[in-house]
Amino acid sequence: MQAYVTLYRYRGPVKGGGPERFEKVKQMVADEEGRLLHIYGLLGDYDAVTISEFPDNRRAMRAAARIGNKIGSQTNTMAAVEGEDFLKIMSEL
Image (cartoon, rainbow, N blue to C red; front, side, top):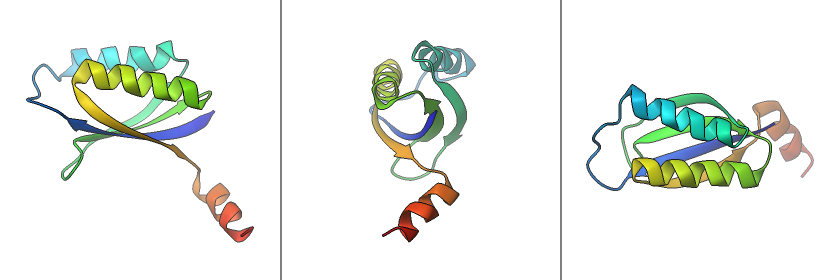
């Protein structure tokens, strides 16, 4: 499965963002046949980041859009390549 990093920026006040909403987020990821590996709260321009795996770009995009709508945030999703693969790609340039 392909890894993805999604950055979230809340658009308004954050209320009701506890464990119940997190369970809904995990279910939306599972609905798209994905797996949520990590979630981190952030200081700075973005409020949260998730690291997930999905079978393809389409499912990653659908999950990020659904979650963004649910929690009222803008999302920025990027495909990620593990370090060794990244270094191999860079060495081929």
